[in-house]
Amino acid sequence: MLATRLTRALVAAALAAAGLAAGTAAATTGPATFGPHVNFGHGVGSNFSGGNWGGYASFGSWTTATASWTEPSMTCRSSNDLVAPWVGIDGDGSSTVEQTGVATDCSSGRPVYQAWYEMYPAAPVYYSNAVSAGDHFTATVTRSGTSYKLDISDTTKGWTKSTTKSLSSARHYSAEAIIESPTDSYPSVSGNAFTFTGVNFDGKTLKATNPSALNADDRGTNTWIPGAISSNGTGFSITRH
Image (cartoon, rainbow, N blue to C red):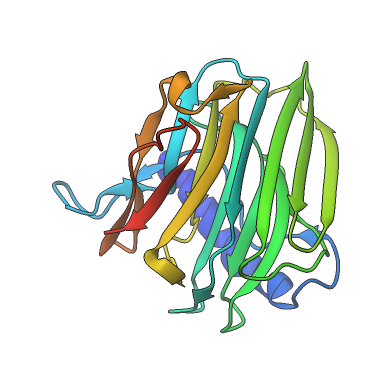
């Protein structure tokens, strides 16, 4: 089952990568399915065994997940590189995810930044709004019954996108602030880190929700490992090791 999910994500990325390479011309179905937390590595006992998610996830029936970050500058190492920081509900222990974030895609040979949302298992949808490295984002996913409101704001450029979708099969098992590469292939990241701030689930600080740390695999040669939660309980950095 896990292998099937990963294969589906990789195939989706390969088939549709050209769509994202066109830049920010229009909101469209994106190049890859980000989807649930999948554990994979590169051999038993590998020092770099991880999964497709890196960051923190908290288990429980959450109704709101919010986080902020500044999009780092990235340099493509290969045309397969694809990574997104995001915030969401579900996906760790369930087969649905309601999430929104910013993807950096290298299929064109250069980093292309786009904001998106996904109601997995439906494909992600990419917004046409301009995104640049260095932009500051705040994103929130809010659940009300089977309805999900996905908000993302580029506070640097001054735009906000809000989408409301229904998903009756959602299980709302978890809430999380995550970086993810469905292709298991990350670009070079300025500062070698992604940093989240203001992470709250149902108004509780990340630390107060007793979260689980998740390592992300990076081509079987490195691991992205989340650091300690900040003293105010709402922030952390995840770095390549």
